[in-house]
Length: 457
Ligand SMILES: [Zn+2]
Image (cartoon, rainbow, N blue to C red; front, side, top):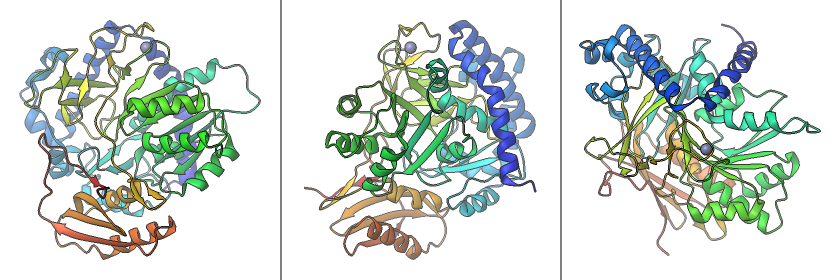
């Protein structure tokens, strides 16, 4: 096995070599992007037919030469349940069995690491609460990372020479099973210093850290940034970021306004997922709307029954095809986020299609008197556990009641103990957490699950 740091530095060099190409594609015209997607789709399906036993069975009838975006509807769709039930047969390297990847994830306590000197893995419960496991190959990890940062890197390159290299601060997941968190660690260099704060840290600690590092870019979960904007308004946080970037949760108009007021700079929205990295990113040059990553993904807006929804209409969900991660071919993979594809090109002249700000609801934060607890405090230990496939957290006066759909017999006591200790650290007095196994969690109409249920006022 090669040492982590040696692999990481090689990976950083490869990422730097790929940066120009990925930034360049931001300026590709629509026709070139469409042609590129067609080529990449055929390349992905060829890999899936050759190296993924599960996909081979489903795709063997396909004539690759005539395959294009227009004929995409002929391909079967897949869900997260399909992925988790057939993981070993879907991956294109048969060493990447689910139990091996899960074992790797369990060992990721706070540090980024390679699997078989080549892969990265992550786990997430996404917006539905259903746990998923994802694995990226060497190049896919680079592309996923640059897909998130390339627009910012282009801006940074255009800035006049600053006295110091730009500092990026993130206020997001602190766990290495979260792909964005571990990719930031993989690719951290002195030329782009990153300071990562965990959203589960006490707010005063995050504020002190940000005051100390004075970030040029402030990146974070929408709800966490909202809290920091209030700290800035109150005079406790004094930083001068050039951009504020919100992601992972819907950027509701009132939160966007609050962030803009606090710092008076452009507030960009990221729509991202563990399956594909950045799906769409706000344009700060042309106005409203987010540019889709039209070179890296195929996004199909559809109705709840899977019928295509034309531009201008709100889709109930999307089918997403990840063109850049051949290790885990996700072809027409269902993501149940509502999305509206806009009917006009962006005023900035980009050839990438536009979507409206994704809506939806924020996971609720819990308040215990003056102590506010971000949902991530619960989300993170829950998504690390392979035996919990779905969950709901209900606030109780002194803590929480967690309903968990488990695989096999579950021992939830260590989860309870971990959460009690996290809540104690955050200042909740004598917290009590109870986790119970359940068969299923009742959903709202439309299939959405309210994962975090605060106490009624
Ligand atoms: Zn634009």
